[in-house]
Image 1 (cartoon, rainbow, N blue to C red):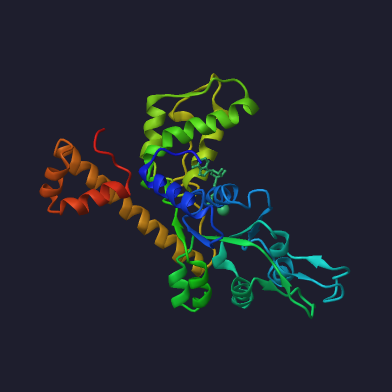
Image 2: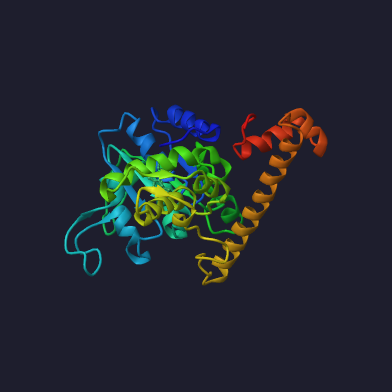
Length: 318
Ligand SMILES: Nc1ncnc2c1ncn2[C@@H]1O[C@H](COP(=O)(O)OP(=O)(O)O)[C@@H](O)[C@H]1O
Ligand SMILES: [Mg+2]
């Protein structure tokens, strides 16, 4: 996990605290912020590191097969069950099960998962007997699970079972000082494969990256750099090679009311954060980077103003 930001230091210290235990962990964060990397870091720094790390993507499992995928089945349990099959939970025995996008798990399976979390026992589809499992659970979501609980779409008891040790991975726009090190990391990652280096960004190109809001977070940055490297002819990456998805650019149009609501929420949040960040920057510039004065000028408590600086990864000296 490449990072120099304060915001991520906090995440690292949470990882270090929880990794040696068997505690369930719930990772919150927008898409592309590195939630899976965090889950892997916890597993590989835990006493279970030699056991399996099994990923379950709750969005990609077909609904009717989900129970048998997770819990396994006995031969003959349903048409097509031609032999006994271990579920993914049991595959993770002795290791860690990573439940990605847990918010997408259907209600019915939420109850069955809760039982496993409570008893560390599971019953494969069509089996009479339960089996003991020794699995560490890490779940991740980009949803507001509390809101889903209020709306009755996520079981409250499961929410509390999972939310023993929450880890929030901040969006890239709130830790922009990570951008340069991430850019270098992705240049190193793809240089050998693409060839034709050494790759270097112009100051202007870096400015463009620093000004962007990164709705797709680190994943979007990685794709942007990869693409720029492919487009660059002499290793130099200028603004011309940086292609960013704008609000009216490549952003995809929602297909359902649910998607529309989600997209509107995300847009609003983005616009508000952009304004807030600019507000803090302007106040600091105008006060010659004197935090106390900047806070005074805008009519804020110093501690609140400082909290805003932290939120956007703005350091004292520029
Ligand atoms: N801090 C980081 N350092 C290096 N690579 C990162 C970092 N954060 C994210 N990535 C990369 O970005 C991509 C998306 O990360 P991922 O963990 O899949 O995000 P999420 O699960 O939150 O959607 C992956 O290719 C991952 O390796
Ligand atoms: Mg993911």
